[in-house]
Image (cartoon, rainbow, N blue to C red; front, side, top):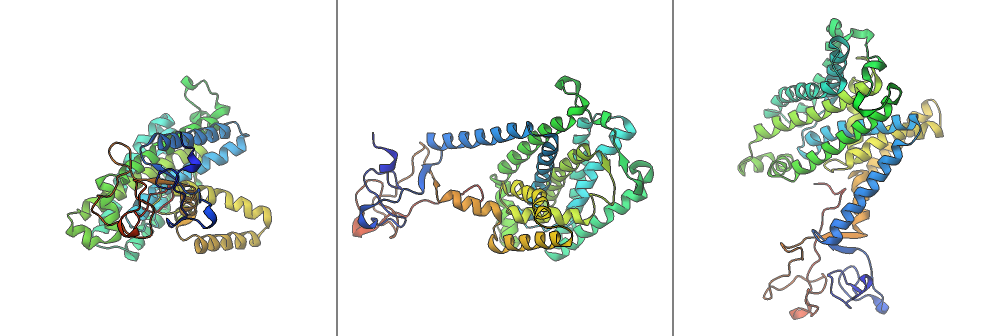
Length: 410
């Protein structure tokens, strides 16, 4: 059996090549990136290993002190909210500055149902998701006629109007005084065996489950025909319409789903904080915070919202430790500018490119092996040797396959 280090980038033994397909000077070989065929046992094993590491990190986080568990829960909730914004802005190109309205509507739906009607907190999540979906459809209607900055202004108006609406309906929402949910009303269900004092741990695992479901939904959605239509709408609306994409259905539907996902985050946020105020977490600053997390993490990437949520939650703590007062805010802004300037594709995009230099996921044929070019096809120059190990006619080579890394922009 040939050791792994003796394999070239195309899997042929004994043909060590450097990055551009030519032999390395001095007979040395370049061992990275390691090519793993998609669908192969190595690829499946790599996925299982990554999932196992993520599961271990989540379990370890649940054993941290209550304050840290609360921080982790905040990261999970913000990751869900940013994922909802990512569907509209990242994948479909519909710039929204009013997602704080969806976030607030989901939170107040849970708060009102629990306080005024005695509903179980978990039972309010479907109602919050449904209401935010309907609001998303309504907000998406102007996108049928306008786009770009004009659409952003419409969503901005929605985000600015939400706190005023909350103050107007004081009988339901508590108005400017806010709405307080008592701890006993947010206690874990009896079947969990957890006490009211362990509410933070219960909400942590609920947020973990919600984030996993959202990421699976977004992954399947963006890789379907509907996802292709979303990306086509973002890149060129005229070409997408000429190709048969129904722009009206795509725009309104995406806004609805985006609002529903963000409303889910808002419902969890109400259970997390237990106190709601229109001047607190649902102003325009919350929308800016979500947009900041999206572009810091990486728009149109699956795990970019998770990275962006980590940055949004922990960067203020980091800067406050380095400086105090207004200097902390200036330092926070400088770090944001540096990240955007040095990492235009977001932190997840940079991490994805770095991972691609170590492990290269190549395409596979139906039987799990990479497809070889036809014998009569002249391979382009500058690639790796042909799969047979023999050099093709004229000294040409076959270009290596490309792959989509976890952080690569779709």
